[in-house]
Length: 305
Length: 309
Image 1: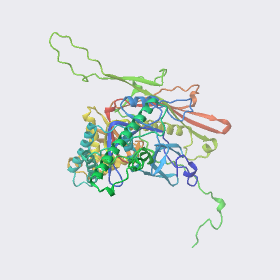
Image 2: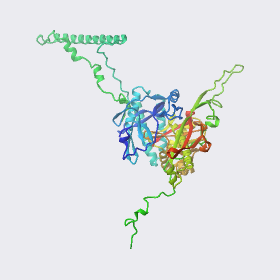
Image 3: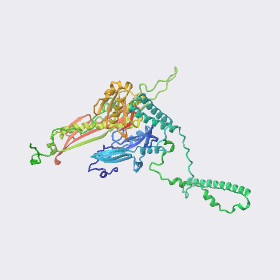
């Protein structure tokens, strides 16, 4: 079953009974964060996202066109939200249920019109127009974490982290009062797990990021500054090579002084052969790994068992 | 002993099924929210009047009546002016409509009486109110303050946290909570098992009463409503609680252009319902027109209640 494929969706000629809905944009308010627990038990700190549906007449979404516009005009509504401090998440391809989807908002054909759902919501026909829904919580959480890694959403601030800690602590404490209430106990365990993950993240040693390898372009680009950068990189590399060569030479001389004459290496050994073997990994290795649609994986420090 | 059966003949004396004169409505959430005092009807203050000149209507929100404190000022010195903190909010009205078509033939043979213009007009009005309720419920996604967390069922602590957040933000009453039925059912389960003073509250008992969709009663001064139009966020529901001034709505008065007064079936609360005739097709239409807009007025007056839904 795929979105926007009514013939595949149909079962016995019946389109699914989906409540028609408009497209939406995701927004993030800088203060809103949560700990998402993944299916393997690990947790990740992710930004909370809210939807702005393009329903005409709601939250400043205007109605455009002479009766032909398929959706509302969200220009003013979006501007108002951004002015109030919300960050709009750009539409992009995402990974949901292990597959790449063209957008985080997908359109489905229903019996009463189009429905727009999140990419992580899998819809399966259940007969008679009914639909079963499954939610890829892990995929959604990983994508939200990637928004921070890629700089689309700024990392959580210290006050926001403290507020989240306080809210989770309060929830845990309240539930301890009702220690014989099954519902309170069950919910308490989930809040406690989230709180534990949050605190472990705060105390976990930060991974020191490895310095990026020097990038030397294959051919000098026409831009003057970029060309200068490449020249400087080449000079730096030459200096490093020279320094290494000098060190090796000194070592060889020292060996010659201590070793018997018969074991002395030949002085005419080609330098290029040695340089080749010692050349550090260059940018080719860093470019070889394919990127997922949402970019890089969440850093190790944010994924804690 | 003989058995009466149609298998032995006489099939042509009966028909396969006969419609009996009863109509049962399919399941739907028919509750409406817009009459609650926590919602501000901006049309009562001039929005959407006839000849208003715009589809959008603005109004100020100002910091008066205790918003700014006086400054300690020494004797004989001039006090500097304190600017009034203000902002402008705008509600934008849009058109929503629906038409029901019925043929002369169906109208003539329908024994239930449903397929007639007046009955369809009544249905059209309820559909219009449900549309407005849907729009109001959709605003839950816009509040910047939230309590509860994803993946955890709604419970009494989430309710108390929302109420506490509104009290901390100095929001005056009356409060209104709109919960998805799933969240409300989860809350009921928790209330049923609660200890301490919660179990002895008459409001607790009130919440357990079966009332169907819509108004469920009052708990701690908060009017509780259920509404299946509460937005989803993945596997969660974005329920909301808010005080007066969080949400406003406006409806536009409508005068049907070139409409024959005899064709107006209903005109109530800016909802215009008319009938029209297509003689060549042997059918008629009942069309509902409704022009409205909803807007979040002051963000801190509302709070999201995130819960597994």
